[in-house]
Image 1 (tube, rainbow, N blue to C red):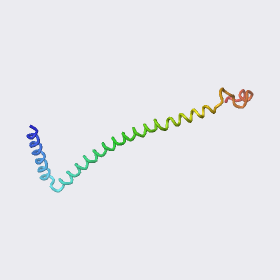
Image 2: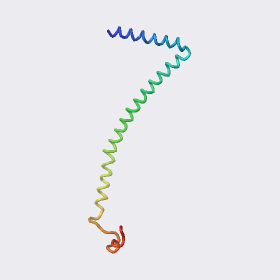
Image 3: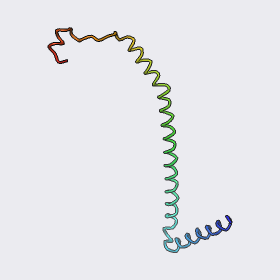
Image 4: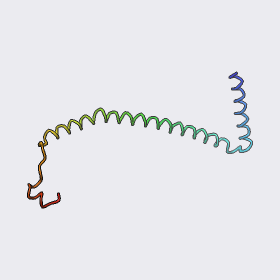
Amino acid sequence: MFAEVLKDEEFHMTYTKTQLQRVAAARDGRSLWRARAGRLWRAYLRLAGAFAGVMGGVILTVQYLVLLPLFALAAKRAAAREPLGWRARGGAAASLESPY
């Protein structure tokens, strides 16, 4: 069954090429190469998009697993150095005279 379908598809391809040569004999080679180049370009774009997605996932994972714990550790150390409680800036008299 597949052999018959393949034979039929081969006939269609040769027929199309023959008609293309008949209609535009000088331009048929360029048209075929342009179509092939377009298919290769679209395949490249699909591959590049997939690669970018994978690389984005890898970079975000590395950031999450490496950089985030470093920043969390730095925040803990900075919080440990902060004094406990709330203090007004400039004393009580300054706070009554200023809206800040």
